[in-house]
Length: 96
Figure 1 (cartoon, rainbow, N blue to C red):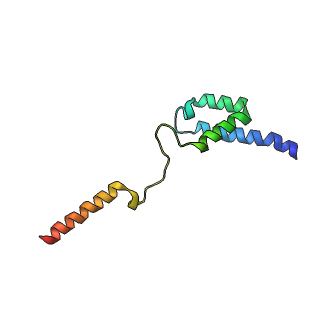
Figure 2: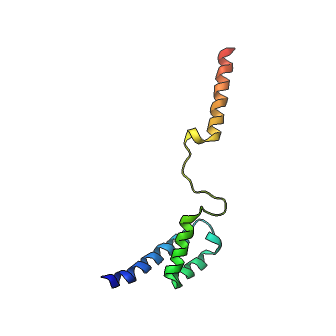
Figure 3: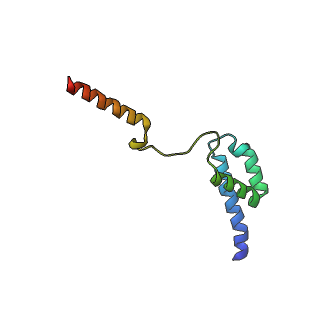
């Protein structure tokens, strides 16, 4: 059973990392082209996959892009500015 795991784990790790590298939104993730990452992970499954995972989880996406979900209205500066503007308009209309 242990021998099977010694073969399955690097294969599964390499497949995951290759799929992740190919689907990465940047053309050159972490400073290398996608094809270079695929070759590194294929030829050095432990080291290549380990480096890929380390870079993926240790630092934010490069290129100034932050992956984030939708902003709540309370945190959206554009919405808050619009809301203040609406309040000013209501006060002007009600006071006239």
